[in-house]
Length: 275
View 1 (cartoon, rainbow, N blue to C red):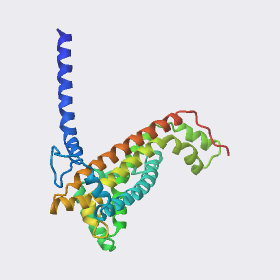
View 2 (view 1 turned 30 degrees about the vertical axis):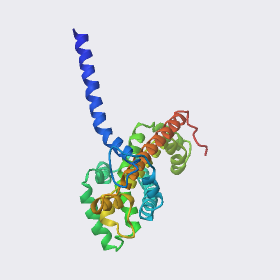
View 3 (view 1 turned 60 degrees about the vertical axis):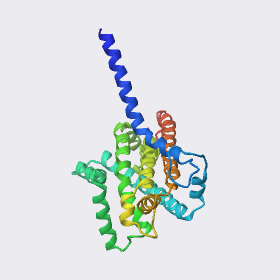
View 4 (view 1 turned 90 degrees about the horizontal axis):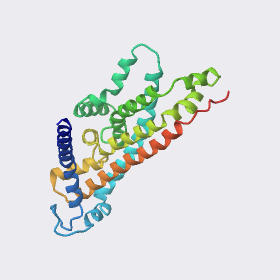
């Protein structure tokens, strides 16, 4: 009887899980299928099949220029957020100073703060420096949004890493920077790539900050998509949405493959740098 109840409960769990998966994935599949429609308007299911929506995207400066700006902003944000987030995580986890927890909460607060509040605050701050509507406002705003993700991911890796390796290197005469470069960074390198991947995706898909601090000279792809939805129904949006989903999947899969490869290398015995 107990085994029968267990089987029924397991079956119900699978049915519920399958229903949730379908509910989450179905809208994405509909967009992907609609992006191959041969019609000049949005339709599902497609009456004919074509790649003309993708061709329209790649041949239109209306879409390509915002896409290139989004890519440039995302790459710059990834580098800056990874560097700042890693340094902050090392200071928080390895540091011993009063107010360390309060500082950690302050640095990760953009994650828990409503994005609209953060965007309004950045708008007034950047307006005081007269950089609203310029690409630099996007670099700074997206870095503020992405850095907390890197801090959390790298901090988790540092807390699980063995600190005795660093202590051994320091006791043998290695400087702090040498220990950081040869011991700490290799150990947390998988987390660095994971944090960088999430920072890239957060920046590339961000909309609210781009609306507030961007302008005609700094229009990202998500903002262009938002404007297109407000003023017209362009079927090219289905092709762009499909490519955004593909970029997210490729980024996360690549980051996971790199993380696993680096984790295997990090598991090998570490060589303490000589003086």
